[in-house]
Image 1 (cartoon, rainbow, N blue to C red):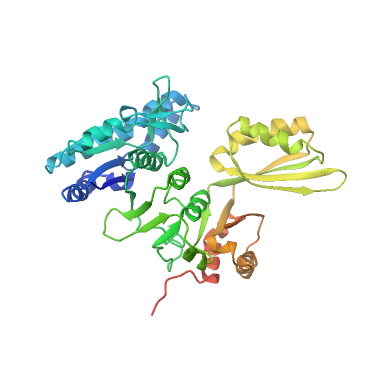
Image 2: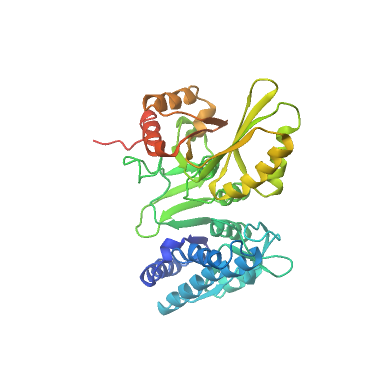
Length: 407
C-alpha cells in the first residue's frame, strides 16, 4: 500500500475551520486506500507567542525550559487534528516526537536528529489509522524534551519519510509552490514545476522560507522526493528531486533574498597568520554561524575583516568580537544592521558563463551598490543595503527573464 508523509505548517492549521479543512483533505486521501503519516506544526504564530512570553519573564530563558514550553504548541495541534479526523469518521491517533522514538542529541533549542523509530508507527498504520506526529521535537538520551530549531517540523517529516521508506513527502503551505522569486515583491514570478535538491538547498540557505534547509539536505541524502503543495487549493505545486540533465538547460532557477542578516567589521587587525582562525573559532565556540567573509589587506601590516551573521545573533556576536578584538589590538569594531543578501541560484551556472556579470550589470543599472560578494558552484550572493532589496530582486529577475510568459 502506498505511504505518504504529509506536513502541514502553522498557517494551515491556524483556526478551527482550517483544521477541519486539513482533516477533510487527509480523510479523502485515506479513503482511497493510502497510508498517511501527518506531521503538524504549532497553530498560527503560537511558537512566536510562547517565545515572547518567555522573554517577558526572563532576559535569557533557560534553554531546557524553553524546549519544554515550545513543544506544547505542536502537542495542541496534533490533538486537535486527531479530534477533527475522528469527527469525520476517519480513525486517527496522535503522538509526540518522543512517543514515536525521535531521538536527538543534547543541544536544547537546536537539536539534531540521531535516530527515528518506525516500529510504533508501522504498527498503528497496519490498524488502518492515520498517524499524526508532532513536528519540531524529540527526546535526548536523558529523556528530556528537545526542539529542532526554526523549520524543525519540515525536518521531522523528512526523517519520518526516510525511516518509513515513504513514497513521497508532501509539504502543505500557504503558497502554491516554489517560485522564481517571492511573488509578494515580484509580480510576474513564475511557479517552478520541478527543482533540484541542490537548488532548493541553496534557496533555503539564502533566505527562501518555503522549506527548511536541513530538511532538504536530509531528503537529498536519503533520496526522499519532496512535494511542495498549497493547502487551500489543488495546484500541483513543485517537486524537489535529484538533478537531471534537462535542469541544466535553465541557467537561473530563482532569485531570493534574506533581510535577517547583519554585518560586523573588525578594523585594522594585524595582518599575520592565525588572526582569522582565532576570531572565527571564538564565534564558533559561541555557537554563532557566520555566512559571508571578506578580508581586505590594508596599509602598514593591517587588514580589515568583515562578515555577515544572523541579525538575531548580532548582540551576542558583538560581545565575542569586541572581546577578541581587544586581544588582537584591532582599531575598532563596526556593526551594520541595515544590510540584506540577494542571491541568484541555478544548476545551469555550471555550464554557462557570464552569470555574475549579468547580475552585477542589473544592479549597476539600478545604481545599487554591492558591499560583499560570495559564490558557490550554483549560487552567487551579494550584500546590499536593505532598502534596495525589492529593487534589486526585481532588476535581477527581469535581467534573466525569469517571469511568466504573457500573451
